[in-house]
Image (tube, rainbow, N blue to C red):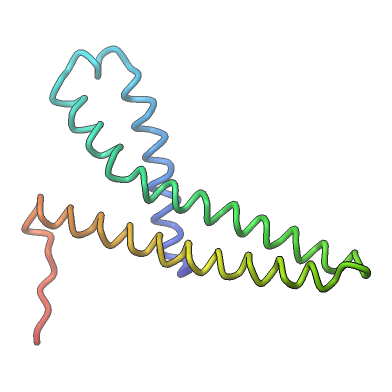
Length: 121
């Protein structure tokens, strides 16, 4: 995954946690417009944050499997199979994160038409 996308996803995770904290504050709960806006943003970035967190877990799992491969001599074949499965999972999660990120960008451009990019054909 590109480093720039990874940074954006990490920022979204922080924003997700921030919104969760804001939604629990009495001032926000008393202001229906702010509560609705934050709830919508929370719902929009939720799938992307979930996908990114699963991606991070898969990376940790891959690292531990590679460490296991270097320490275990009897189970190398099993470790190699597990590593291959983890790598496939990571690639799938990268694609899912990109898709969710693209979907989020599309929804934002619908709400804010001035932010759309125009491409020449």
